[in-house]
View (cartoon, rainbow, N blue to C red):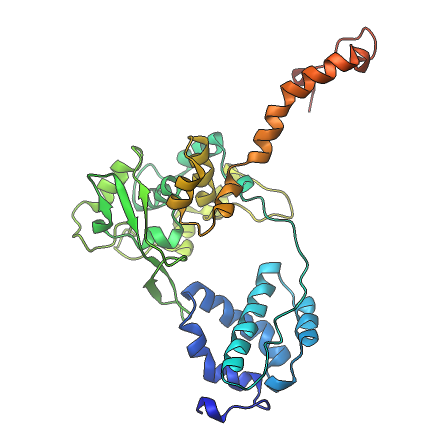
Amino acid sequence: MFANEYNTETLVSVLWDGLSPALFTKIAPGTQRAYSVAWRLRVAPVFGDRAIGSLTTLDVEVAFAKWTGSESTRADALGALSALCRLAVKGGFIASNPCTGVDRRRDQAPDVAARALTASEFRRLLELLPSSGPYRRFVLAMAYTGCRLGEVAGLRVADVDWDSRTVRVSRTASAGVRGEVRVGPTKGRRVRNVPVVDQLLPLLLEAAEGKGAHEYLFTGPRGGFINSKNLSRALDWHSIRDQIKTFGPDENALHWHDLRHTAAVFFFEAGLPAPDVQAILGHSSLLVTQLYADTRQLAARRAVPALSQYLSAQSRGQLEGGDQAAKTASDLVI
């Protein structure tokens, strides 16, 4: 069916079958998978048999409220439908996108810095990983560079500049819609360089040994791609991760992407300025990078001595309850 055969009475499912290939050319493989699942489980059951011209913003808003799953899962469903409707607008089948204007609850911004490992937690990670081998190298490459898992999987030997001690990050390896490995541009579609710290250098040398310039650097024991599933299976990740760091009952357990958060926090703690951290991580916005600077906690720490001295002078001992000595943090039993 050609595009000019569609109209306002065309079913949403028919449009999806005909236009999703064009839609998928504009998005990354990971988003393709998410949209495919969202279409099958959420969008199609509600809107598949509806005429595209009958959809209203209120219809979509009600559906969004009823869809099950996390906020991000429901956002994938809304994103898939919205992308399809944008193509329908381009084709002249509908005048406007009914997904535009859907009111969504504004949640508190995620505290990504809190997902990062502390220095002691990072030491536990080092202890729990195998003492050597491809999986240890892969995990530490993520932690030392701040690269995403797929970006580490997509690195080639030629990407390493041994003289300048940097690695060029230009591609990512990820699973396609059917589970096949696809190598494409990074999430931001930008090339960037990451530093090779002293701790990473021997791992790179091990990984590159015996390989040609255009071979993939961090491969599995048999030379294949490493992904989140086979990495977790090889390291028994779901059994050991709670020994490294735990979170509250309403939060997700430690995830591989948290190593990227860890690197970002370490970069700031090491004294790197925000623009440098942004360049290394490949963030499109400095505002995203500054989420890792933890400026609110630093401000609170700086306030303790100044405010304590000021309030001490104002109260002149009245806040301590007479002659009883004031308790310190070391006196508290938790």
